[in-house]
Image (tube, one colour):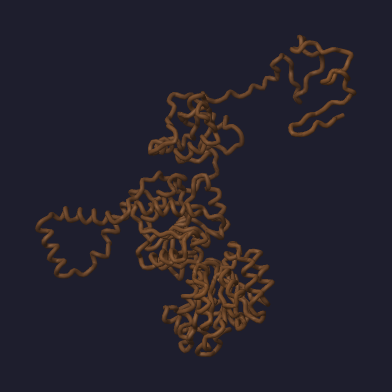
Length: 615
C-alpha cells in the first residue's frame, strides 16, 4: 500500500506534519514482503518508530478503505513501558489517524481506572497503555479483546528490564491467537528473541544500524572531571551549549533532588522527573518544558524512558549509565527527527576505564574535551549578546523616543554597561572549575603510579614524586582505606597518581606524581571546607619516608644460614638453654589431668570446632 499518495488519509496526515520522506525504519516496515506479517524490528530510539508501526497497522485495521468503521471494540493494542511514552504514542497516533476517523484511547497507571473503563465502553479503534493497567482491564472485563487484529510491543527490551515479563505474557495469552504481532525494540537480547519465537508466527525481521536512523545527528562528547566537581561541570556545560531544552540524567532519585536544588539555586529553569512523582506532577513538569517555562529536566532513567521533547538539543550524563543500552536510550532523547543534538558524558577520574568500555560497547566515538571554563562561557556570552535578535527587531516610535532620551541623559558607555549588566543578570553565573586534560588518559604508566596490590613502596623511587603532609595520624585513627579517597577528593586526582603513604602518630605523609603535583596543590588550596589540612613537605629527600627494603643477605638473625629453599641446614641446633627449661627425656608428656600419658595421638584444635584426633 502506498501511503504517500495524496488521496490516502494517512498521506494527508503526513503532509500536514511536513513529512516529505520516510525514515529508514518507516520505509522498511512498508516493504512489500512485510504485508500482513508479524514483524520483529530492531531500531534505535528517535528513528520514527511510532509513526512506523502506525503506518504498518493501517494495512491491518484500515486496508484500502477511506475511513475506519464506527468505534467499538478496539482493533489494535499498543503496549509501552511507561506512562509518558504511552501518552506520547497516543498523541502521535491521533494525528496520524485523524483523517481516517480514528479514535485512540490511553490506559496508563496513575489515572482513574473507572474513567478509563467508561471511555473504553464508548468505543475506540486503538488502545495504548502500560502493561500493568492493560492487564488489569483485560482481567476485569473493561477491555474487550475479541476484535483485536494487531498487537504492538513498543520498547520491548525496556519492558523486560523493568520486570513486565509476566504482564506481557498474560496480555499476549489473552488476546486472539489469529492476530498480527509487531515487536519493536532498540536491542534484541535473547529474552526478546525467545518471546518472538513463542508469540510470533513467521516473523519478518528488520534490523537497522544506528547510523541509518538519524543517530549520526548526535555529537558525542566526554569530559574528564573530578568527582567533587561534577555539579560544577554540569552547570558550565548547560551554560556553554545554551540549548533550548536540555536533559540531565542521574542514577538515583536522591541525586535528582540534589542536582535539581543546585540548579534552581543558580537560576536555571529546571524541573525533575523521577519515580516518586505522581502522574499529575509529571504531566506538569513536561508541560513546563514544552511551553518554555523550564529549559532543563533532571531525570532518572526509568522516568525519562520514551520522552520526546521539542527542541531537546542537549543530553548530559551526570552519572555514568549502567549499560551501553541505557546510554543509547539516554542519548536517543536528542537528535530526533532530523534535528542535531549533543550528548555529553561526565567521566569521573577513577571511572575512565568504565566509560571507555561503555563507549566501545555502544559503538560510539566520543570526542574527549575539557570541561568548559568560566572564561570560555563569558566569551560566548559576549558573542551571543552581539548577535542577539533584539538588535534586528523593528523599533517603534516610542522606542526611538526613549533611546534619544537615554542618550541625552547618559553616555553611550553607561548605556552599554547597563545593557551588559541586564543581559548577564538573567544568566546563571558560570562556575570556576578545576579543568582536566581534554585528552583521554592512557593506562597509568610512566608519569603516574602503577596500580598495584599491597604497599606502594617502590613507586617513584627515582624522585619522580612530591611529598605532602595531611594533619591526621594514628591518634585520629588514620587508615589508608579512607585516607586515599580523601586525598583524591580534595586534590582532584585519581588513586593512580598517589604513591607511598606513611602514617605517623600525628600526621600522614604521602607521595603525589610529579606531573600532577602542581595541579594537586592548586586544588587543595581551593577547597573551602577541607576534611583535613594538606600541605607540601619542604626539603624531603627522595625515599626519606620510605621503609627500607628488606636485605636478603642469606643470614638468619640467630647466626644460622638459610638454604635456597628456606630449610635449616643439617647439623646441631644452636646451643643455649630453652626458655622453658630442658625437656624431659625418655617419657611421654602427661595429659591435663596428669594421670595418664598420651598414647601416640595428638589433638589439633580449631576455633569454633570440637577437637578431633589426628594421627
